[in-house]
Image (cartoon, rainbow, N blue to C red):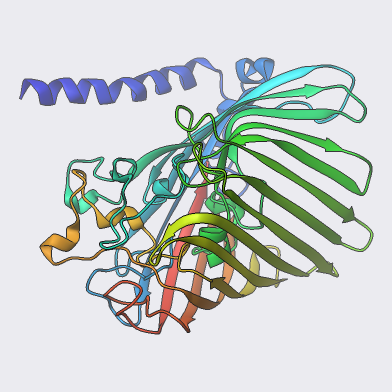
Length: 451
């Protein structure tokens, strides 16, 4: 009982401190719910206080949650290799994300320094952790570096899918050199690809295979960006690798395994066209001379004011890595496309189609939340008649359609339907990637509140 009272007092301290801070910041006058762009504005935005403005600070965040119905009703409640909205018939709090930021200048003649720090709680936290791609036992499929996949944060098997992550924590500086150089140092989201982890920045609840399995989520290192002229901008830097690859590396491990990160973007504002090519390249591990790399090409085209089209191609490889067949050179590649139409200022319809080829069964796992194959002690749930994440060489296909509806500016509702199928694996339903079903329909709906 004494420990319970102590825990309550400790848990209340941050809340009390937060309330005290807000009360002493002289927040702005509250806006109406219909006028506010973020929910904080309806309560008196602390970002409008003198203290926050004097220091150039901003606090904010979002909450994202949803539910998915799977047409084949899997007993393990996993939607196969589909991630983020990966649980069937279960309400998921995917992302409760808070951030504190001091943005730097993007132009001018003065040096400027800033930072950003994000903390995320929810079922998506596992997808933003800084530990790289896990290595798996060839026979059982259980993660070998399973300590990195301990999801039992709340001390209950019922809550093992919820975790805490710090997806961004970096310093940023603006250097008045030429047109201005921006430099990030720390942990940050990748500039590679089209889709990204933060829910407000994506049209659909679930993600393309390309994003989930073909690209990095985060990097730890140093990244610089420079705008050459009205059409060209470039990025480049060095980032840490991981135990099995060149991205999603952490702060304290594999610091001897560095990789390069570079890209360029061409934009024509008059035609509504942009083309981005970004990639990363490095060694598979600190002890290996084998290579690992990937690139992503993203073409965006606006057709008038209402129609928006995206075409993306990714290609990656990893030499001398462990797959279901043993040590071999692995390769993955794919194409996806997005088409959006703005029906009104508050309603947009969209469709996404994709083909993703996992040539060696190295990238795609069923279920996609591979860490769920072990409990907090590193013991396989399969021993209790449950499941183990498995993979198989295959092509994966998906078509997703849905709408984004914003009845108010701070609320986005995203109902959608998705159809997945595969031609070399059976990853849907129960049984992992080899003994499940060939296809599935998903019907999902989620909401995002910005504050």
